[in-house]
Amino acid sequence: IIEEFPDSIYLLSDRDHFYPEIQAIIPECKEKGYTLIVSNPCFEIWLYYSHYSNRPIDFQIPENVREISKAFKHHLEIVRKGGIDPRKSIFEIENAIINSEANYEEDENGIPKLFSTNMFVLGKQLVQMIKPELEELKKQDKLRIEQYKKKLAD
Image (cartoon, rainbow, N blue to C red; front, side, top):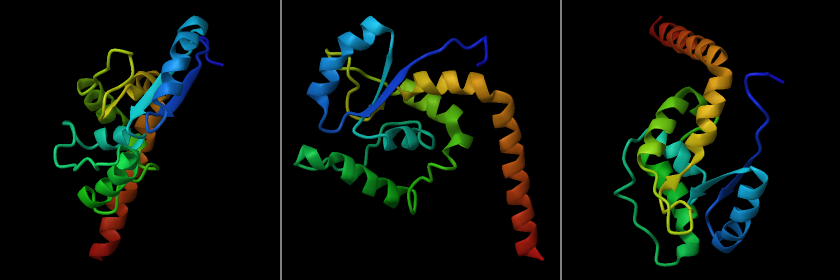
């Protein structure tokens, strides 16, 4: 364990259909010092903010609210030509932090409104912990891409 980073407990959830359950656990999370991370409608909103600085304005919200997550995931596949690869999102974590925090809104119960996520709270903690390794990964990825482009050109 790294001494400069005390132990923390984060609970992650999509807002989806779980509003009553999330609302019910907020007091216990506060009492026990757990950090509740909620993405509304789904985790993909965090991935969205790694590439976009504004809320999705061209997303058509389905009449059946139970279909929002599925529709948003499909929407990402269209606007990002195949979606956002979560395996590569670590390279854009700083963008996701900035953009999701700038677009964050809570309702009267402290739960993120649609197209909001407080994943930036956990993201900031992670970046502090992995900054040197992340920079090295970015360098390696950039080199890998350059080598691939060079190979294609040859």
